Length: 58
Image (spheres, rainbow, N blue to C red):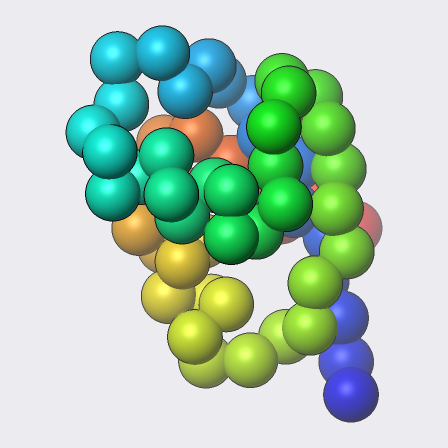
């Protein structure tokens, strides 16, 4: 299965609880942390939900 790398670029402080839980689900806990996750529709939806906190890196 294909994978994507997701990087947290902004702090979770002040974000709603559902967005904090989504960051935890992706495995992101610190700013500038990069995780590799499977490229599935559900993962893409999580990234879209957090578009202001994360980016997809090459």
